[in-house]
Image (cartoon, rainbow, N blue to C red):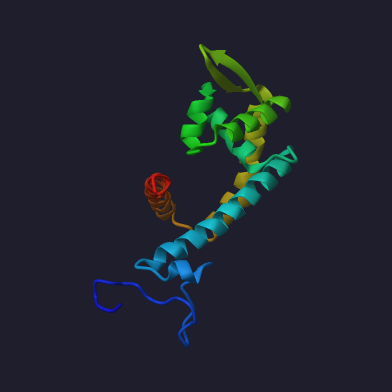
Length: 184
């Protein structure tokens, strides 16, 4: 496979004097767009680091033992101080498996951090005062440990925002590909 139209390149043994691309699966990077495999590995590493951060930051804020999804659901329920439905939360977080979000809500309610109710037939979730206080403490720990470090590294806020937009856009590509794969 040669030619300018086929960008496929072998990824495996490193070229002397060069390192990269950094991928977890050379067989997947051996494609017309090896950069996507590079991004996927970076996203996996970042996702795992982010989940570890969320649980440890929450523990430092005073709530040991919360799962990453519980932390995210808590912050999402607190967002804009409006009641959310299970469907709202799943849509916001791009989660198909509603039972995982429902379980997180139940765990948060057991801790007294959220309250559930009903709006017609839909389950609603609101933040409690204890939940809002915990989110505030989490924000303080985040500011002290993460934001200060990111600023000290010289991260460009505009570049971080562009990266976030790119990740949101590419998530749509993965969603479409998942729908296509489900129809095969």
